[in-house]
Length: 500
Image (cartoon, rainbow, N blue to C red; front, side):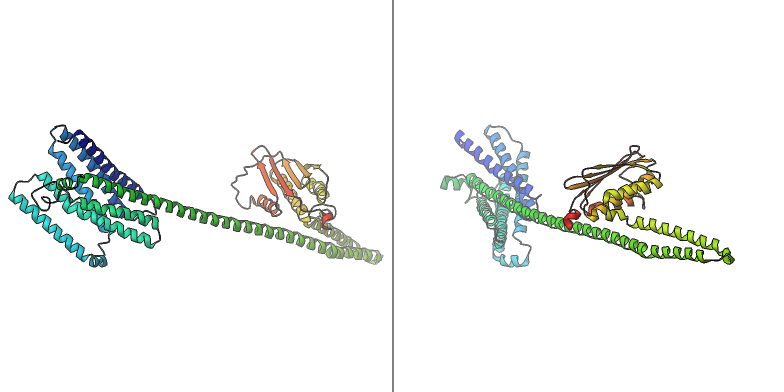
């Protein structure tokens, strides 16, 4: 019976022993969900299972030992459960060691031919010795099973795990991941010593348990084998937990680099989009300017050529009419009819010229052009429009004046066609660095979110595109039964005097 001090030391050692492996198992199990991981998940998972099950085994053994000290009868089923936990934990460790040491590769098998031969002889000696001992004397079945699990599973599994971690450490060193390589080497060393400590089993009449066991080791060194195992468990846990921490640092650095790369890519995309948007605006601006230039050219040609030809034609008819004598009076009605047709054609061309490019817009500016628009076209559409001017009216960039005039023209046309009202208001505000145009009505309104079925909605889209082409803001507000408001704000670029 151990003294109370020895029992307390035993409890502390076994608790730390189990805690170290359990923490290692949890840490590695959590690592399996990360990417990139410490090593492949298929390798980490068996090692994590070993840590969790072996930690539970040590705590279970601690419980059984305490129960034994208290003199309580222990059901043999509990001993069987402990042995099952011990066996499964070392089978998981052996699976990890087999995969990590890459024994499935032919080159590795050839390189490890001698160690594997020694391992085979070791297995044969242990098995033969156990059979002979069982035949020669009656041994405790649980003690024999415990020793065989440690001889046949624990020792080779721990050695394989040590080799596997060493292989992983070399790969990490080859990749210049030196902190990771160092921590894996700590764990490899710990598993190596831990595997050798599994030879220190309970005394039994079989080789080598009758020569090398935990009692002879304690009597020789004065150190319980459990302390060495606990120390190696702490070393293994330290190495592997530090390795997972190192991997986490590497992972964060990798994520940081990837995040910066994504940010740079997004910035490039934004710059490209901004450049494309600016190019689109420039293209639209040039398109609007070219369209207005073409309108002005056609307007001038109609005014300067076609209108003059019609005027000359009318004058020629009048001259011809004056020279006809009474004998040819029957032609006078025909000539009068041709003169009337000429006048109608002249008036039509004048209206067409004005629609293409109002002369007031080029000669007098935006306000007179809109006043003429309200006085002529809105009257024809039976639309009563109130005009309000705020600030001092000044000439601005011709393209801006053109955009504002066309938007006002399109908006008032929409009011006359769709708003079902005869009232509208136009407000022009000249501020220091901004010119604003606002058209409102008290009509039926509409849903600004659509849906718009083409060609419905094209007019609004055209207005918006024109305004945005000159870096302006197009604000549309409307709701059913509450009328519609269109507001345009365009920064001034230069006055006509500045350009001159």
